[in-house]
Figure 1 (spheres, one colour):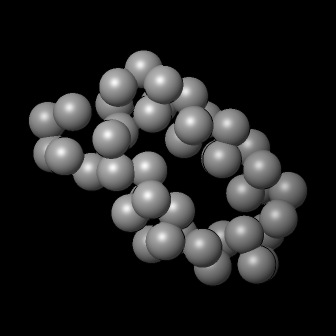
Figure 2 (cartoon, rainbow, N blue to C red):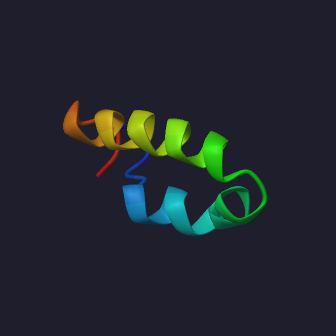
Length: 42
């Protein structure tokens, strides 16, 4: 967690993707949650 970026920061910064491309968002969300579990995001 080199930069101290949280999952919440990433989600809020990219929420427009969820609105425009909901299917893509579901795919990304899965990977972002995995990154948090692995400790790559706070």
